[in-house]
Image 1 (cartoon, rainbow, N blue to C red):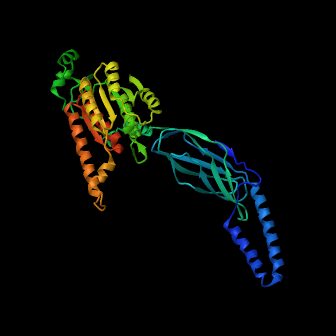
Image 2 (cartoon, helix red, strand yellow; image 1 turned 45 degrees about the vertical axis):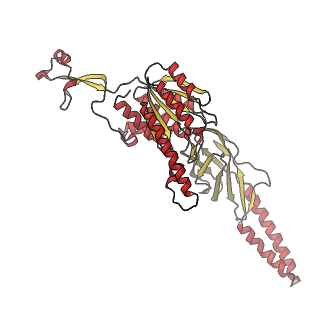
Image 3 (cartoon, rainbow, N blue to C red; image 1 turned 180 degrees about the horizontal axis):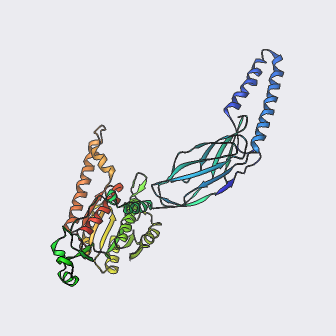
Length: 449
């Protein structure tokens, strides 16, 4: 949006270092006048001359009028830097050295500010800086602040570009575009690190002539007899992976998901993984749904497929934030049993931190035997770092012992879940997305659903 700089008559003037040095001359002469009174009028004359120079230089600075355009993305991805481009037009017949700053909201971090540009006479200069938002939500980006010098270098003028712009910080939607780019380049393996397993397809795709290396079990003898191909070339059935399967995300929005790693909550990491997996599922013909809950059900989205399913899920989760309430797992599993009758893949995003929660989940896992359940559990990097810390403090051995006890207890809880047929994914938050995507593709390839 293009803006004009506006300011008051006396506002925004800042003396430069050269101006301070210039005043040291009459000040020094004034000090010497205490010894030699004849220098007093010399000091007064220099003071008047400097005041005149400052006034003239300031008036010439007052007449500067710049044009600025800021290209600010309206949709940001949480945890990803966004590039902001600025263009400044200088109508004067002299070049300007401009320093630019930007007012940001509290959850934003900048890189590349202050931005310094040299704008040629009657020309234009372009520059950019990066801004990253740590949390999702709606924010307002404030005005930009420009500072530039007067012709004689005695003043700098600091002005604000009027106007604010609203931005929306969403989960990591750029990961969806990156996956699509890799898919179009036929390089999904760079992202998923998984390979296609021979013979893992289960649905009929089409008939085609036999090729060297095809399995004999895929030969369709009736189609071969009807086709009448020359030299008795067999016709085989080409299969594909099963589609139109249901995927349900059980998303815990309670207190355990408020834990932060690198400035982002566990729920934010879970949403990034959830959106990418749902996007991949839609490309494979599957349907994705959502049950988000804390002490009550926060969102319910029945399984939907098609190109718009990812956008529907994105709009649903954008306003979900972790709370300090205890999650009601029983109500979430009750809704799952009541609303989802068909066998589906259920991915539970949660974190277990106490015995009561672990016992409750163990009982609920037994009631969800109809579905294939994947439990995505957040591993705490802080506890593991405490276990590996050097014993350089008196309390370090006690901390290492407590960390080891917590990790042993967690391992025991996860093993009990695996005994109920639950597929456990125990990873640090930064690995949520690649680990979950690889597990989903592995389940599809092995026909576990």
